[in-house]
Image 1 (tube, rainbow, N blue to C red):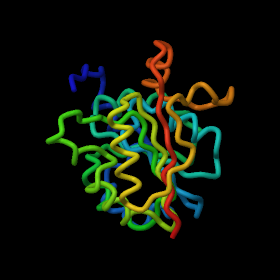
Image 2 (image 1 turned 180 degrees about the vertical axis):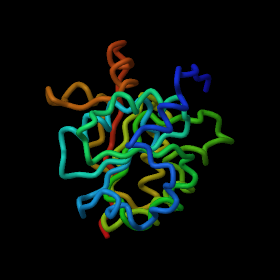
Image 3 (image 1 turned 45 degrees about the vertical axis):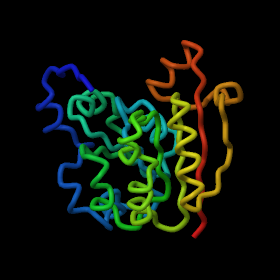
Length: 210
């Protein structure tokens, strides 16, 4: 992935109250950082953060954490966050470390337009592969909920099979999500771009009860 440099990137990263730099120290204690016992929803690969910012604004009684690997992308998100929000935090990290950062305290995971890693030899890098599903087992609090959206049909089919083989029940399977969404439906930046070009959006809710 080629990323453009962001002006004043280091200043943005160093001064934002929303960026958690010592994220490894909060494993099992994220509710203490938020100061409440509200549910915790995380988005792995938040991009520029439109989806998670708008959700945090709409649902003040849910704690949201956006996770992104690339500092340039994080630096684009942080200035756009409403300074009045108290239920949104951001972590800059590799998703492979997800089970080091959370310990049985997450209620929902969003996987929105994840890297499809199209080559077969790279399939275990996909965020819906068995490697990541095993990691997610260690971060969910009770019931497990994974909400996924993608424009990549091959990744979608792979993920449906992966979720099913791991014991998840598949709900709200859609091969054209935007044909039936409500007017106030919250989208991502990629989603807006793809949908405007007539590219179908695939979605699923993978649920596993405790």
